[in-house]
Amino acid sequence: MSSWCWPGSAPAGLLSTSKEWLRRFLLLKLATVLLLPHTAGLPLLVGCAFSLRALLLLCSPHTSTKPSTVLLSRLAITDTLVPLHWMLQLAWWTEDVCCGTKTGLVREAAGALCQRLLDAHHLASLLLLGLLGLEAMLVSRWPQQTLRFRTSHWAQLSCNLVWTLVLLELLYSLHSKPLQDSRPQTSFSTPQTSQSPSLDLMPPSSLPAVSSYLRRTLWLLNLWLHYAVLFRRPQKRKSCFH
Image: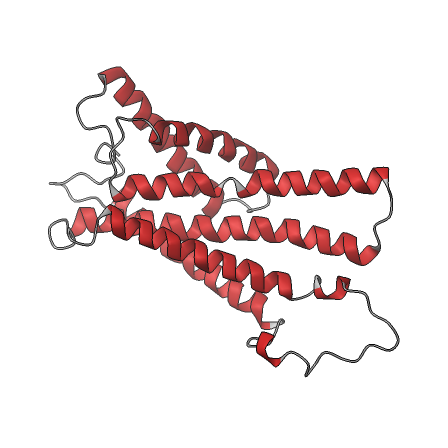
């Protein structure tokens, strides 16, 4: 962790406190993403608080712009999806209580949107934690050979690719059921099996299976990477987590 930020200009007390906070933030993210259900409310709330603190530390003028710092800041920003999920839930619950005009399909679509925001948060967290584990593995195993690839530019590019993948999955899932079912249907409407072939590149029923396999693969990859970095460190060189 000491190689991530704070070159030598920060006070020693601030340096140790900030490093400890970021270390706790990373360990908390690993625990909540890899060990706990991604819809658990209390861990998400605690994670948001730690992410806010981590963002404040990472925005410090003493913070360097190393790849791990870039990845950590994007990991903290990912938690903004959680308050958005809660705000949408509160808005729909308030409108439902005050107006009481929601139909069953609209209520189901609203619940699906909130759930998919948490799914997007989980996928983005898995991808960014995987990049952090990969960067830590490269630092500890092949520091000189991979120096040209471990730059802030490649870290920014990787984060952009992560969010592109997450948004594509979110948009595609929103196009599938039950949001499609919330559209009004009449007795004169025709089946939509052949009207929009360009939007049916992948059957909607196959998306949950592909998404589940992707998350399981990322979970196993994260588990192996972070275990290898945390518990199998080389003796002559410290890992970037410490």
